[in-house]
Image 1 (cartoon, rainbow, N blue to C red):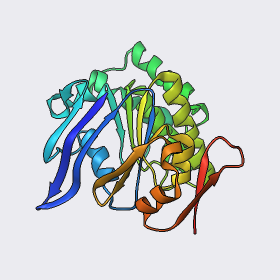
Image 2: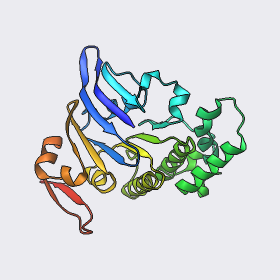
Image 3: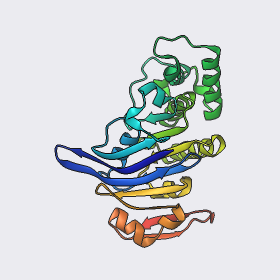
Image 4: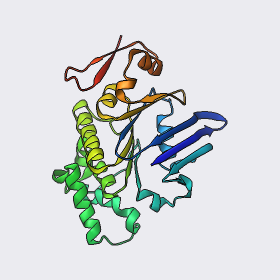
Length: 255
């Protein structure tokens, strides 16, 4: 699990993230919510070894994240950045195969174990139809599922996803989040995901962490967090919370 102990982040004397204390465990989907510039992406980058904390500590399995080697860490924690690198001229299966890099290096040969991990990731993510197509020819939702399959091929225990829904329409957002939630609960993975849509977060996350101006404003289950007063404090505008017609979660609308 991750333990964040008073972690902060500063750039040129400006504090982008005030001290954060929180624990993230396997088997749950954690949603980081809040307005733009609230510190969500900063926090997930600290967890992903993308930048060091200015003060405080971030531990994974009891060790400071900066004490883990990059490949050693990647065998346990997989990170999908907000801006994805180019996958030009790669098929889905080739991109998914890059998930095996932490296990054998860039020039290592794929073994039968690697091939089995790739095929398992394809099956888990239901990307069989895209495996032999060029990634650049896929729709946004299809492409996102292939990237998710690459993370599954890493066989990591934690997935860190920075705004994976940003370029997707509503149907593909639902598709990707439903898949993430299913994989989390079936495989016991820990998932930490940056989300803008509070209703998606309420529906698909087990725990929400709300940030505002670089501070953790509130955290709890969606049931605990989905109140008029809490959402108004997070987003700065009047919100009304009501039961979803299905009755299994709450939704919010702006007044």
